[in-house]
Image 1: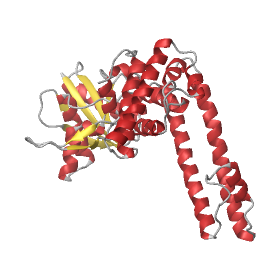
Image 2 (image 1 turned 120 degrees about the horizontal axis):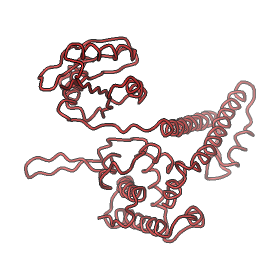
Image 3 (image 1 turned 90 degrees about the vertical axis):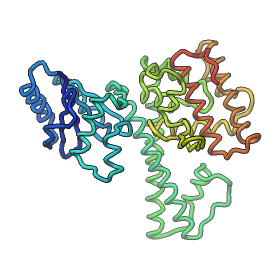
Image 4 (image 1 turned 90 degrees about the horizontal axis):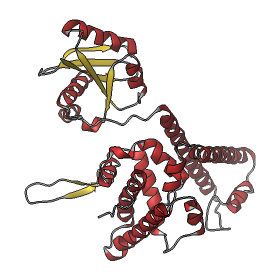
Length: 375
């Protein structure tokens, strides 16, 4: 006999529900304090009630608790799955009915487990998770730097200062101009404080970029990173982020499955003979999708041939890998030009379409399907 236990996990409490194999309703729906020992006791009580040989399968939605809850449960010899929230029919139905609470969600998870109606979230090892969190911390600092830049520009505009010594901001000339502004007293102290914040965060990002370069040269990541940076627009940061976030690329049967996982495929809302194509689904890993779209911006400026920097990045790879990357780079460049010049597509749509194909080429590179011709 199999007992399916759904956990609606929060930092403040755990709500557990059980659905036995063949049953129609969830039972033993209770809320406990957020301790692993409470889940272990709950499972022991199930075995006591239904028999010592009862197999228990636990599941919870991916969320703020990450992967640690599963690791803790597995240390107690309990099988646990992490479910993608959007793939659980029960919880989505509760949202539409506007009758959503912890007990309903826990029951919905048990139903999804029983019917095998869910998508399991891939769990990285602890090293990959640490690398992923470090790269995401770098992204948080980049957002912080962008806010500081906006605040400095707003301050200069409010006080009538306009930079006319160049066309680009945040160059050495622009920073020199900011430091030389004719301000005094409290206003000067405000400017100096903003500039100190800018320099501090910029230096911290530079240190993190250096650390990311060191991580990328570790044995676990070196080969994959060196392959991916053969593609235009893909630098060490993006390559390492993709490898750490995705982990096992072979879990995607085809390239289109990988693109769908990243939410880079178009949605559809069709009925009868009427077809209605929507924008991209935006499901799956939002961070990697954002990075690939940023990489695809480079193909709007790409020219035929290879730059000296790209040739240097491709050094040390096999001839097959370099040929595959060159084919991808040329195809994606032509793809963007075709969409914009011939099909008159907006820049953003063209870049997103290129990002989808870039994801397919990345899948081919990381799974060894470098002879696959994309349709």
